[in-house]
Length: 482
Image 1 (cartoon, rainbow, N blue to C red):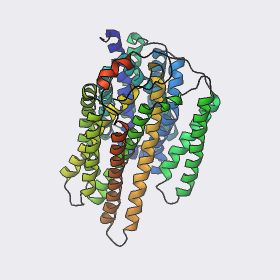
Image 2: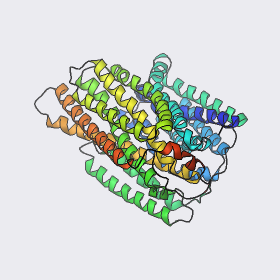
Image 3: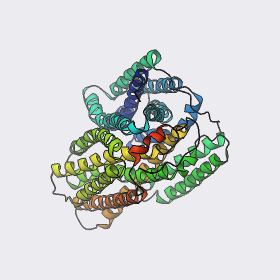
Image 4: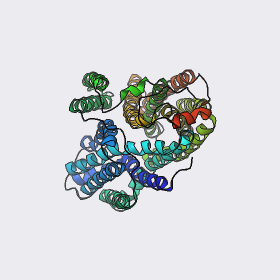
């Protein structure tokens, strides 16, 4: 089935906004020291520009399905990009730190509420047998942007100022808004859902407490408080899910998790994301504290993996369309486990090239794994609940990423503190080594889970048309596994 020209134009515009949102997620880190100096704030305060962004994005993601049911494609995307532009302008002109933080919050609200729509529309524009390629293309855009963020921000901060960084983002986002007003077409109307204030409160409290609890878990003084926050957050999330099941028109259709194939894909994806994001936090500590290299070296060690991994997502999507999930995701998971194992075998004396190659293998395999798994799970659902599935997927990925980071950092700290009486570099190595071993174990568990959960058969290339023909409205269906 050919794709309409208007749909291609629509996807290009939507992907442009997604690129800016993804770029903005990693753009700020190199600018934090300059912001701290210019606005006279501490590191603990400045980090809220990063952690606060992630928190607001996470709590607004569950609203994306509701907003997509209430607003048209144009209204949601243009409204979201206007909010993003306003936040960028506010951060550019900010007279104080709190104005910058408010600008970042506005940007994050757009990213969490509007950007999941882009993936939903991408999935529904393409027939099921071509969704792997479509998701790979989206992954390429989303993957390249975060990799380009830190080097671009470093250049702008060094040559101009941190305000120039926000000014350029504002100009580009305003351009996207103007093009959207002129060229963006509505895709279609999605199933309406009702607004439920109790659901909003429960999801906001639950996700906020969970993610903040994860972020403070690795600090010895904050561990008891973190555990209490996570307990309250887990209870609130459970009540939220229970309430969705009782509503005639739930804000987020959690019944999609009853579709075994979709739930299986999410379970494996959460394991993969928790390990990968955790390694991404520990690796700079290994390069700088254990190997004694610079911060620039740690960034350079991760850059090839980020860039090449984004391209591999496109390749993985095409391979999925042709060969199915088992013959794409299982080798990818095996290579991820191999990459994490290689990192665990590196010593303090290991060269930069060995570290870079090990992480690049991990990143390449990760992108080749996630696109097939995500598409395989989505193809099991009716088109009418895809927007809800994307909200659930993005929310659970946020939780898994925060948990994985907290877990690996806690393991690293515990192992380093246990290695007493040795130089600080050796202590740092002991901690990072333990974290890499834990990541390899998580990825081996993900490989075993994928092997079992996708074992039925690998025939979906021949059955994808059935998923493509699903009704536009309905409840989750149980399509045979690929």
